[in-house]
Structures are given as C-alpha cells and as structure tokens.
Image (tube, rainbow, N blue to C red; front, top):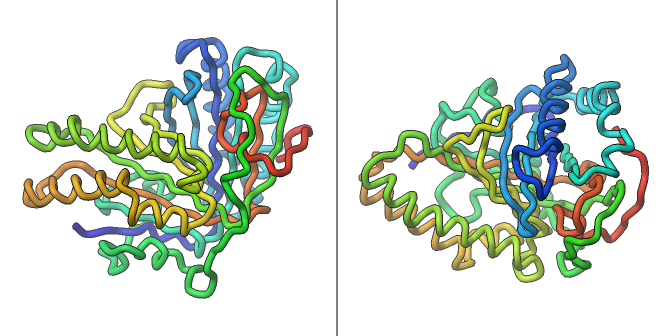
Length: 334
C-alpha cells in the first residue's frame, strides 16, 4: 500500500489538555473543562487544528482530551497559554479542590524531528490538520527502519536517551497531588497512531471488529502495563469524539517511549505489535487491497527543554507522573 507524508516545514507544538474523573463523561467537571477549552481554543491565538478523544484509564477514571496543534512560531502557543482566558481557569484554586483532575502535556519540535505517515493522501488527522499539503507516495515506507529514515534529524543524530522507564514510583490511585510539573526526558519519542474506520462493511468490518481491534487493545495494554520491559512511559488508547463529546468512528493511541529505539524494537519484534501488523497485511491481501480502513501516525522525538508536563489534582498513575526524576510544585508556566 502507498504511504503519504504531510509537507511540514516549520516547528509544531502539540498540546494535550485533559480532564479525568470517576464521575463519568457527563460530570460537571468534564462539562466545565470542555466549555473552557472550546472557548479559549477559538481565540485568534488558538491552535490551527484540534481533535478530541475519550478513554477510561487503568484506574477507572473517565478522561476527555483536547489535542491542539500550533504550526509555526512556538510563541503563538505561549501567547495563547499565558492569556487571561487560559489563566483564569488553569490557575484557579478550584482546580485543586474539585473531584476532577486536569493535565497538560505539551511537546514542541522542529520539522526535522517529526515524521508523519498516512495511507490516504486525503486524510485529515494530526499535524497535517487538513490544510498541510501531502506528498506524492513516498519511498521511505513498507520496511523496518523506514520510520527513522523519515525523521530528517536521524541522518546525523542517533537520537539516543539516557533516561529509563525503570524509575517508576508508586502508581497508587488513592494519592492525589496538587500542581506538579515534571522535567523533560532527553530525546523522548512520542507516537500517535490511529485508524479511521467509517463506512467499513462486510468482510473488512468483520475482520476489523473481531480480530484487529482486539489485537490493538492487547498491544496497547502491554505497553501501558509493562513500562520497564517495553521502554514505554505511558500509553493511552482512545476513541475520538467531537468537540462536544459525541463519539466518532476513529481510534488512536498515544505513547511516550524512552527513545526512538525503544519504539522501533517494540514495532519490529514484539509479538503484540507483529500480531497487529501481520493481521492487517493478511486482510489487505485477502481483500486485494480494496479496503476502506485508513491508517495514519505521527512520530516526534523531542529534546527535554521542549517538553512540558503539568498535572493538577491527578492520581498517581496519570501520564508521566510515575516517572518524575525531578518534580517540583509551582504555578503553571505558559
């Protein structure tokens, strides 16, 4: 199958803002967060593109996330996040007294540390945001190692990391923290990988529902639950929604790895990923390439100063909280 890449020339800011609660998707905390993020993101300084998703985490907390993409000068995100509409909610003391928890995970990267791959040149997803031109079918595709070859910086940088997922602390969901900032990790590798399954019918839908989805879930649970073995700090498997929370026929996973090499090893050799990969290839061959399932991913390798993780009243197992080699409390940074 052909692969296409978004023609992104400048830097990109990826901002994941989330709310977590044991009270479910219809809770007051989720509604207030959704109203706030939608209003502030609509400002002229807001993101170029947004997507939304929901999932229930390992502790049973319903989580709703807004993912904003700012393309170009990183100052634009800073202007937005330091503005009064943002600060009035994010800095409010109420964030630390409610039953809901809130977090933001922000990654900023130059284009040479980013790669994207789409199975359909007409897809609107992630960093391409529907407005970035797509390439012709690319050569760096369909072989192990092609992911690294699509990251231009890898031509003169091994993108190594001295960090380790073995530094995990307590993952108790009973302990809550106030406002916590976590230092970045050298050459953190982040992948967001998804599928659009609108309109699947017949044999393709049967294979997708009965075989592919369970295999993907199995693989994502392995990454989530085995950080030391896999080198994966955090893995969230989510279903996309609209800005108001209505479910879409799209899923994706976001995973933070110690390094690009850790991601490569899992992709190339671990049974949980090979099961997904091989069954998809078998499906494509069985259906003679006539498939409606559309796949995409984006991979970025960010330097430590270009990462910002902040958690407000979140349980201990949230995101990067279990791996805080350096933790300090503070008012939020723009």
